[in-house]
Each structure stands twice: as structure tokens, then as C-alpha cells.
Image (cartoon, rainbow, N blue to C red):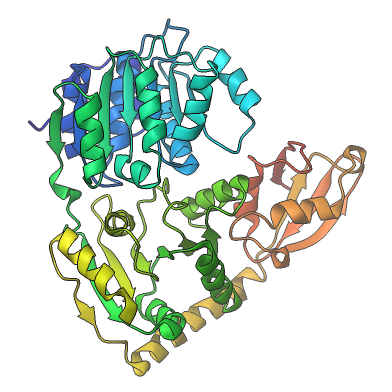
Length: 475
């Protein structure tokens, strides 16, 4: 049942134009399987791995079927984390923009009243996390009367995070006549039970590439003692030289430790975990997508919602606690037709967990020998030469930025430094002379960071003030 073009689905002119603007030309497998059935308003169970294009698979038919005239939400998409909710909302909004579809993301640790105000406006599609969505439904700030479509995204991750009760409470409040679609990379019993309980004659769609044995990913394992992990990590990074890499750790503390060690050794890196304030987590994710830094150290939960095609290497610094997490972690690489590698560090205490993972994925993860020191030395020398070369160029690479605010807005140099240094990939060392006048400020950006800061500051406030930023005219 493969389709060669989105034109085969007889979509409206508005959605067709939006897809053209997004450069969506040929539907991939999950889209060709899901879109026509979703347009027929059938309940669907879709087993498809992260990064397979599933957001467009449900986003396109949702935007097509939404009645623009409607005032109340017509579709609810549940996502396990704030990051994923924002990612999905942005993707669906892009598909529905030409048609005028309004989408809203709703999640915890954000002002409830502000979200209530958003939901009181004309809204077509709401993307939310289970806890906060249940709060809005219980307090009747989210009108469920016209909800015709329910999407449960990353269902396995959602239920493994303990959201089963909230998800069921939400479903119980929705109209029974709704269409329900469930998307999941793995298929634990909890997801199967949820589908059996709340879906009506669902069609089961399995995407072949869901298997972690996909030829796009090369899996391997290094046996190492806990105390030797950091040295092994640096050796592997010296040899692999990944363009973009995620390093997964079990805990927030481990993320902090690994990040601090890499930062101390001048690796281009950032970290993300649940203990980091939300605004900074979003900034880190955006910086990673833009390629502002090479290595992201993360916990499983915090990395959900990072939809990045260019990740060439995933390292399991710690073996995941849940077997399903191995699939989710390794599924971050080998996307969009590109090759990827997944490397796992296994300590003697990980034997039982690894056995469970290997049984689950259906193959043994090949064990590799620790890299030879001579090969590591060659890799490190090459990396240092490249870094030195980049520094030599960047130290002379200064850009002067112009901001349309200064002393009259009570702005000080510390305000600029504090804001700019929080941009992922930028430190205080990259900031040169700051000249503040009555109505404008000039900031010298060093080390080739000017373009990065110029782009980031277009979406960032300084001391709560949105300033226009541009490259200063020389001469």
C-alpha cells in the first residue's frame, strides 16, 4: 500500500501548500501506512521507532480533518515530556499553518493561568503532558466536548514513566465517539492493555524499520570497570570523532559528573536532565539541533523530544535500567537514511540487565576490544591540531553586534554577559568589549561566535526586554 506522492491523498490546497513549503515530497513508510487510514477515521495502533516520521503521519491527517470554524479543541495529542510536547506542537503547527490551524502546547512547571488563557482562545489542536492535561480537564479549563481525535505518542515511554493513571483518567473524560491513535516504539504489556481497553477495532500497523537490528545502526559493546569509563569515553571520542553525539547516563548526578569532566577537557558539550530549568533545557535542545556543540550528555527522559537527524553516535555510558530504553536511546542515530553507531559501556554488574536487553532486541551486542593506545594517540593529535587551527582562525574572527537598547532601559554589561553566556556553545570568554550608550549597545563577539549569538538573540530577551539585534556596520 505504498503511495508515491502526498497528492495521492487528495489533501486540501492549504495542507498541500504547507507540505510543499516544508519540502515534504514523498511519504515515507509510516506516513503511507497511517495517513489514508487516519483520513478514514479508523483507530490505529502504530509500532514505529522514534525518528521514523510519525509526527507528520498523524499531523497531516489531523490538520486536514480539523474544522477551522470550530472554537473548541478538536484534537488532543498526549506526549510524555515537555520537550516532546513542544517538538510535536511545532511540527504540527507548521503543517497546519497555511490552513490557520492553531495549536497549543500545555505542560507542567509553566503558569497554569497563562495556559488557561491560551486555551480560552480559539484552539484547534492541543499537545500536552498527561499530568498537566488532567489538571486542565479536572478544573474544566480544557473543553473536551468537541475532541474528535486522540493521539497517544511514545506510549511505551509514557506508561513506563508512571503516567498510566493520568492517561486513563483523561481518556475516560473524552467523548466515546473519538478516533484514537497510539504510537509506540516498543510494545510492553501495559500499552497493549491500554489499547485493548480503550480502542475500537484498531488496525495494527507495524513498520519494519522499528527493529533495532536496522542496518543503519552498528551496535557494539565495551567491557569496562566503572572507574575506567571516563578514560574509555575520551579514547573512543578521539577515534570516532563523531559529528554529533549523545552520551546517555542513568542519573542526573552522573550527567553532571560526565559533563564537568568533558567540559574541563575542552570538549564542545552541553548537558540536559530533569533538574535543569526548563528554559535552559529548551535552549540546549535548540543549540544541539543547530550544531552549536558536538556532545550532549543526557538522561533518558530529558532527551525525549530531541528530533535531530545528524546524530552519528550514541554512547550508553550507563546501561539503561529498562530494556525498552535501549531501543529509544539507540534509535536517536541512524535516521533519515544515514548510518549511525551505538556503543554501550558494560561493567561486571550489568550482566543481568544486558542479558535482558539482548533477549528483548533479539541479538547479542558484539563485544569490541578497548582501542589501542597508538590509535588513540593518533586520533587525539588530529583532534588537537584541528582545534588549534580553529582557534587560530577564530581568535581573529570578531563580530560587533548592535542592540537597540542601553542605559535608558537600565541595561548593564552584566545583563548582556549573563544572557549571552547562557546560549549553548557560548561562554563568557567569547564576549569582548561591551559599549553601552543611552539608546544602544555594542557587543564584540569573539572566536567566531558572532553569527551564533546573532541568531539566538533574535528569540531571547535581556532583562525581560526584547531588543532588536543586528551586525554593526563598520566604518
